[in-house]
Length: 108
Image (tube, rainbow, N blue to C red; front, side, top):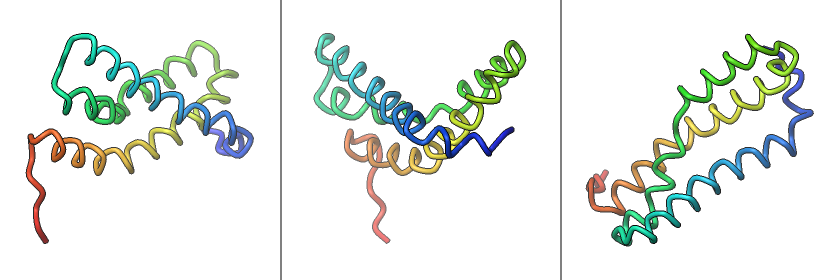
């Protein structure tokens, strides 16, 4: 992995993070409204599917095998995004589950 490429991907990396989340949230929202799902599902399901590291890591491996030069460029971007999603994803999923009523908040 070539971490020296990571700073060069700053704007592209940020755009990727935002576009991926926005695409999932907006796509789920549109389909859920179209299918007349509950307000809870419509508003929160998109956030709940942001965390999916296995697919992204598999994609990086496949790209690196087929095109090592491209793999050197996208690997830091994808793996950094996985790190961010896997760090912030679990608290978001907890929030979603509480909001839709599938879990209860635990008082500390």
